[in-house]
Length: 65
Image (cartoon, rainbow, N blue to C red; front, side):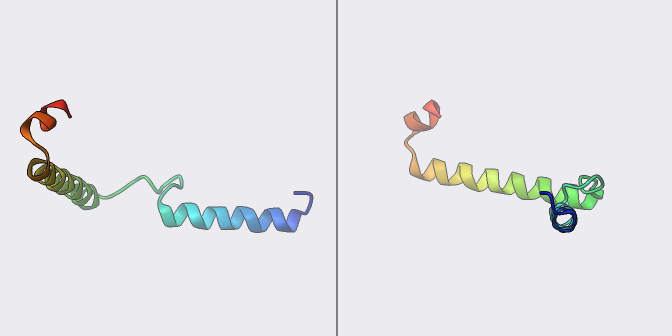
């Protein structure tokens, strides 16, 4: 990393990636609608998972889980 130009390119690219994925300093701040949508999606995924498990597993296997 002795090349300052290469290091500048790496830093710029890292900032771009962090901004795209919301991991920057301001990236973790979401509006309430986004948070609610994420919570709803997670809840629906959990419900689907539970429904699949109830169809696949026997009652004894579900109890062990």
